[in-house]
Length: 194
Image 1: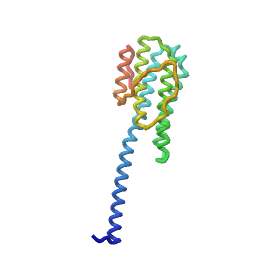
Image 2: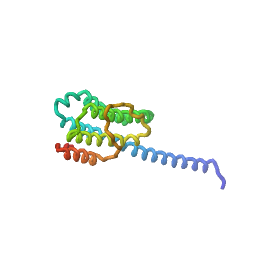
Image 3: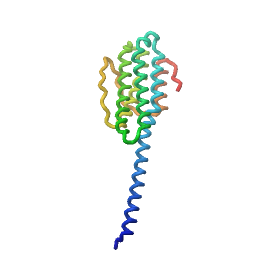
Image 4: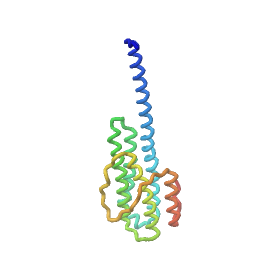
């Protein structure tokens, strides 16, 4: 087969077009899979905050007042997580890799604040403590499930006197709500209305 300049140009042109199509398809596919992680986190933040607020609502007012600083810090950490995801979504492609690390750091900060809340609450064993620890474990395990999806993350370094064990568990919003409501109902508290 003889290759002329014209036939060579057509082959190269069609190859570049095919590579561009594959590259665009690959970026679109990656954008969808990565985008869904960030959409899931964005959707989770208000639901996680509402579950945390349900815990505050079942505390005796003097206890809630004593825990006000850590409650404020935990709510701020949730807000920082939402802000980190929003910054990622609005950033140019060149800055996204750095912002993924900030999202991982923000998730670890929320986990740290919730663990600090549990430690500071220092509730005696009983129904209230069981309910609060159960809901906190759901919140913590759901947050932890996002971390491996974001890639290597800095490990949480906060040390608290009393921590809750948890195993990361990916949940849909529906599963999360059902799990939280089941723990609250089991403890004899009103179900959270989402």
